Image (spheres, rainbow, N blue to C red):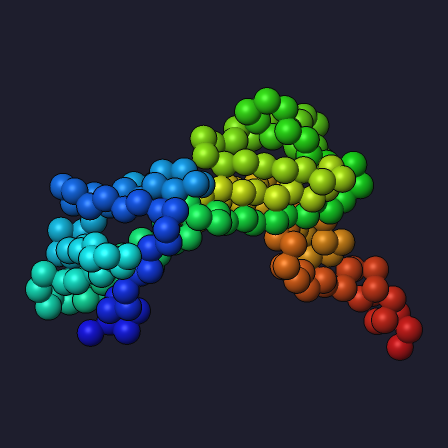
Length: 185
């Protein structure tokens, strides 16, 4: 039995959960999220709890049991408190600003990069170099942060680029420092 999958999901008072036709819909103050269930799993809402059970004991059913429970738990957390991911933009002249439904980024290219903001995601820009991505869907928040980071990944010599706020970049010693040490011998 999956240790994670057998744990019940506690439903807060502000959240309504509906299970119908293989879909689970979670409504709360942060929005509405829907996810399709795997056919090998069943979800039962009894009282203020959601319980995920397997229909059979196949290897596939066992492997998606804990995953499904975690995805449903993330939906409940998302509609109550939401998720956030923070990014820092490091480099001379690198900056960001929100323009309508898009994020305009200056990342050292010859042109500004326009990144469309998906529905259900909110982006806040502080001091032009600090981004905060907010949303109810954890998957969408993480995916948008990863796509923004991929536009200009941090390089290992000066550390310029887009990085997660809590990310640590290990810097390499440059060619000048390496050759200066060799010439001193």
